[in-house]
Length: 308
Image 1 (cartoon, helix red, strand yellow):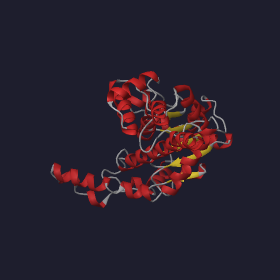
Image 2: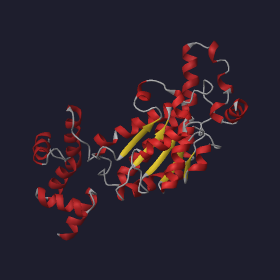
Image 3: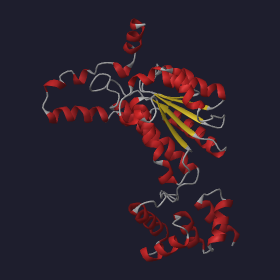
Image 4: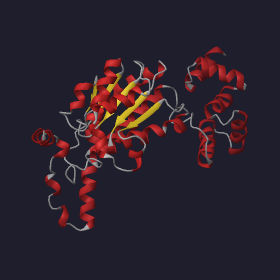
């Protein structure tokens, strides 16, 4: 077992030694930072290479959402925390309900705040955590593992595929084992880390970029933007209250005071407020027009204009 594990790790790019940082323990701080920054600069190019696979994942997520399903992230350690970070931002940013994008991390909530590294070694727990969500074939499950061999993620993906879910593997090794357990494989190979095996660095950055793309593109495809404005943002604090007013002002050209009044009349719903202002319809007619356009503001305005 020990030799097999060493052989597995030895075959992974993410576990290899980086020849550019062999002297890093002798360098002054500025030079260390330059090495790290140079390495980080390689990540976006690696992600660009796998854009076709990311596009497939977006299409799968959108299909799930349209069928009443969910997007579920499954990971351990850094990978699980990155999934959590992306998922929890979706409700306030896009006005979607809690539970539409769900993060699961090996070890549960305790693992969010402290390392519970042994939790990742149990494939049955990955399956059990997904079962606890009452998984259905309408869901999309994204397994996240820098190494691509995490047993917790492997077990979860195997179960999700048996259920009939859309399955996505996100890893930073071309030979990732989880790629064999998923329909879609996103494998940006970012190369060895500055500190050998410290995959919270380049690999973690690549995972964050990919997950940002999946949720952002999915939400745009669901009509959560108007041009490049976040029109479904929830005004849940002072900053977001100000942001909704700025969004309405940007979209319509009205003053702050006018935006404030319309937003108050529309229960702080920026999309609805913009629809009311730009269409000239009252609130009820604007709500109907948005509903008829499946929530796409630009399409709703075009439909109103065509009907006039």
